[in-house]
Length: 133
Image (cartoon, rainbow, N blue to C red; front, side, top):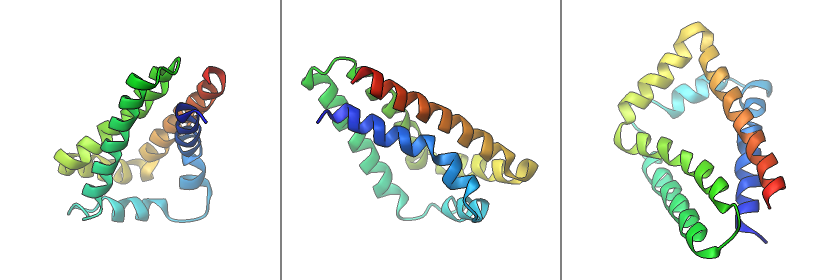
């Protein structure tokens, strides 16, 4: 099984379905986000962010050594997750203020817009995974 196909499908589906599981299912996503990104960085964020960065590094290693055509597409798109991990590790305060601002402004409409953009990117990743691999 092609690692890049599986990664693209799992990563793409998770991103594509984010608007559904965050905004369509009946639950309070704003309270969840406010609690998840509290003023004090929760203890679980550091190990999860480090694990995510290790996964990105593994993906780059496989891209450089496996010789799978077009593996760079999923590798680059998956590497975008490293930006959030780096922000959570090294500038959590600014990230937390950004999320709090999105939640406070316009009844959290900014969060919906971000999640819709993530969903569109996820759809593009799923389509690219099918077409390329």
